[in-house]
Image (cartoon, rainbow, N blue to C red):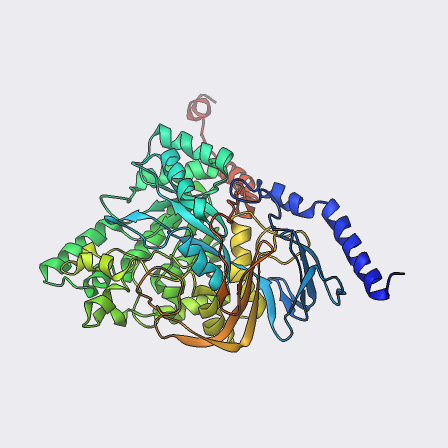
Length: 536
């Protein structure tokens, strides 16, 4: 005769089967355009392990509640209090006194990217290992075209991502414009699940686009329901500023910041916002690093324009004082673009994040080791631009924003996970702990402390811009699609386990644009038929 405990377990398993039969995960997956390549296919993709997380506070962007979480085959099956236990085949994780939250989604990374004559040191395995150890379970990387060709660029990145250890998506950069690029953009959206395109307003002579190209790109993005993204710096003025510093004999890392001051970021941000307004399409401004740029975004949002502002961890918590360090190896590791700004900008950006002016936090993880940084030992223009952050982001945001009372725990989930999932149209499959969501989950202990640096990080780089940083709030467990991949300092990142996540077009930022276009057309009161009026 079955014991009461076994009867309760049977009821739980029957309920799980009923939920799985309703295919909620597959419904989310279909809404997000399918799973696409990688291991496991669409929806779930776990190894069959059943996990019950008990006793924690489950935090979503909309609320926090005391509840258990039951996971089966990589999918969240149930979220409710007091789910019974009893089967030896269900792994139970005690989360008493801890927060159970969606894994982080990093919207801005550059893994294995060819740039400035070298390649970023972290690839789709080491970067993913670092991410998982830090509580990030998905990221969206930027595909760089090959000689302007989008298809060739995508094929290259698909090959790079074969060793992926966690889920990932792609943005696509646009570096030139012609009819073929326009056609390829449509293919990227409709056939490959890429719903965002990045335009560099900086890096003159390589990645930079002109205003006429940007305008055509904005119009194409709008027609495809794809989000236009900009790296906002005035590339012409930056080139002039760089030469000015060289002429003054300033060749060290401090010359990098001096050559591209905040006013150039503010100008480009303002220009991109106004061009997007002219086209009437949403705009996403990546790595907002200055008060100048942030205030342009705030102004546009006050006027009702659809602009997304993304600060990155380095801009939120660091200042540019390190660039004046007398040791070149120390100073050069802080070189990134736009530059880390002088003290005061970081606090303003934190305030903008807490008030909703800026919506989500990325990293711009773009790592180069000290040997690569030394390429510019006699000319700051040759220092590869980029810093780390994919492993550190979740801990730093908790310590600097939640522990200080600047944001709530639900805000934390929003800015590190949910908002990204919504913007790129993969919510609630990602960015939530809801019935049917992918089981990308972290367990954070708010009482534990962390320490950061090259001796403990999982990046391949021998530098870390957060060296020696300490704080409160430790990710003790990371679960990636139902697999425990980080627990008590032990990492189990498996090459090839990651899955490509398609991001479908026409996310919520496009809702109602057709109506505002119609209002605009109706307001023109044109053309005026002057010949007929004169004849009358």
